Image (cartoon, rainbow, N blue to C red; front, side, top):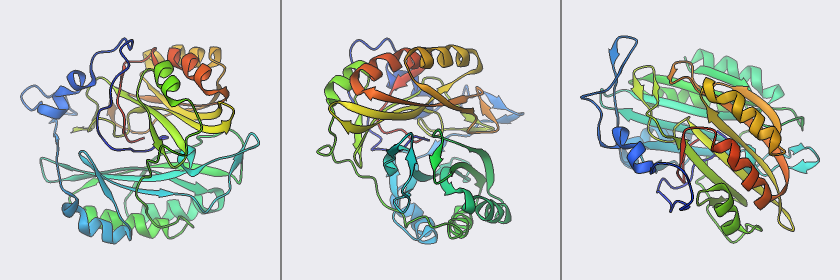
Length: 329
C-alpha cells in the first residue's frame, strides 16, 4: 500500500518456498465461506462478489478517469507523476512509493467498500482531510512510506462503506481536487525497462514478480481470511507484503515496501529487517476493525538487489503469508 496493484493472476511459485499454496489458503474467500463464516461484532460476515467493469461506469465518471478490474476489485490508480521526490539522495519513481490507489468492492448484501491510499504533499494534507470529512470518508492512517524526503509527503489510508459508491467517488474526487494529483491512469507492466536480474530476484525472494512503470515488485498476501468488521476482504486488499525494487544500475536497487504482520510476528520482523540491512521507516495499521489485527512495517534498503532480496526473505518468512502476484497495497 506500497504497495501497487498488478494483474490479479497467480504466478508460478518458486518451488523452494515453504508455504502452502495460495489457492488452498485463500479457498474460503474464493469459493464461499457463508456456512462457517465467523461473526464480527455479533453480525454474520458478508462475502465480496464478482463484478464487471461496466458495473462501475458511474464511479469512473465521478473519479474522472479510467479504472480496471482486479479480480473482485474495481481499481483506479493515480501516480503522483507531478512530484519530484527525493529520499536519501535518490529520486523516487512514482511506482516505487508515490501511487494513489482507490479500490471499490461489491458485497453480497448490496453494499460497497472503498479502501485506498492517497499520496499528498504536506500543504495538501489538511484541505484534503477536511474535504474527506465533509463527505464521510474515513482516514484510517496518516503516515510515512519513506524516510526523510523532499518535498514532505504524507500517505493517507481511506475507508468508506455503504450503498452508494458513486457518492463516495464524488467525495473522493472533491478531496483529490484539493491536491495536484494527476488524472487516473491504468497500470503499466512493461518488463523491458527493468535493469535487474529479475529471475535471480524471484528465486531469492520466493515469488515471481511483476514490472510496473520501471519498478519491479514482489507481492505476498496473508494466508488466512481477513475481515474488516463484518466484511470479508478479497485476497490482496489492504493486507499485502510488498518488496519493490527501483533499479539504480549495475544490479543495485533502492528497495521500499511494507511487511504485513500480526502482533505476535511484529518484533521478529523488525529484528529480521535490521539484520537484513534494511532501515525501519514506520509501523502502523491500515484498518481500524480488521481481524486478525494487522500491523504494517515500512522499510528502506539500498544495495545489490539479489542479495537484499535474499536477506529480506527472512523477514517475509517470519510471517504467515503466501506468494501472489498482483495484490493491492
